[in-house]
Length: 503
Image (cartoon, rainbow, N blue to C red):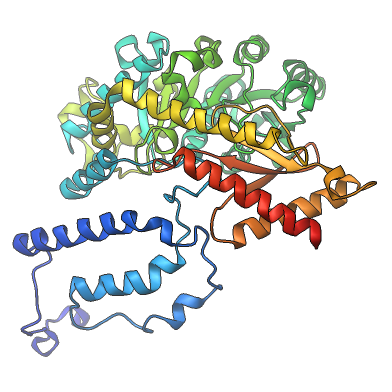
């Protein structure tokens, strides 16, 4: 116990000692921080979208150890301005067209402030009743806006939970499906379970299957083709299932996608569900990227067949202007999930939980602790209303149509796959590089084109491979992006193409 003996000489007595939560200082620094962030957005177009720093640069800029004495917020923000901002990839730049939509909003910012301000840890109802109940309410609200069947909502014996990301949501649903199946066939048969997806499905499904102890050889990334616009073919799924069953394996889980990461392909839910349900397969719909568009009546048809799935998720932090992180997951049978994930240690026991009349969200997710994300989504829905959220999305789709028209108007380029929502996938055609240029060479030249476009700092786009073709992706979804930025992006591509052809 000598190590616990109090040593007066170790106590810090210094005029620099400050309270971690001085309210007057909080108010002062808060104003400074808001102004700093607002100024950053005011000036965001001045920065290269993609940082050009080299790996390890930051260690050369900052001290080797933490400060012993307090530093002023003004000093810290000077370092942010000098060292951090130049090395950020500016995701909220109106010239950011890479990866995926990551729209934000004032309401999203303010929601994050409330989350941090309250700093509740809402793992159970009793740990913060408002956090739990608001989440249940707001998930029903959004489910209604999406016109999900009533059995996905708490009001219809289903229910929703806000996870951090789609990776977590998919892992939770695979675990629920796994345990539900093993309770019927015996846990010793876990090595026979098979998970199905397409070769366009997000890699998080394969990772989740691995974490859930699905044998790596039992993950099926079913090949897609141009004939189905790279959506998962029901016929191909049926063949894969039949082959597995002939081999003595057990079909477990299908992940269908609304808006694949690479090209925004949309899998046909109804036909896929018809096949899956013949074999008792759990169907999850990953609508992380494009599901938010289904708040618009003109896009709701892509969810036809949703009445036959077991779980459905989308990322409000992608295209619903709710700052990262906010993944919304609905289940028709939440008890399948809670049976897998419930733990009941004595130190968390309480009368409310024992009554079975409340939701304890710790049993709906992998982690115990959780943030009060619902208040952020609540603010977004209330601050803008569904009508405005729809119009924000429609403006992005309109800009994508404009970009698509610009691509089609230049004979050197082609749109490789049909534009879905607000993403355009394009490339320079092989003939633009000269007669007899083959696919491999065209791919390398398009890769070089993209590298030069991004090196300009004026715009940032990313790529994917589809059907062995290298395609450049223009994903429109940043809140600040306007038509002029889309036109500018195309001019950068055209000018860079001129340079590429001279190399």
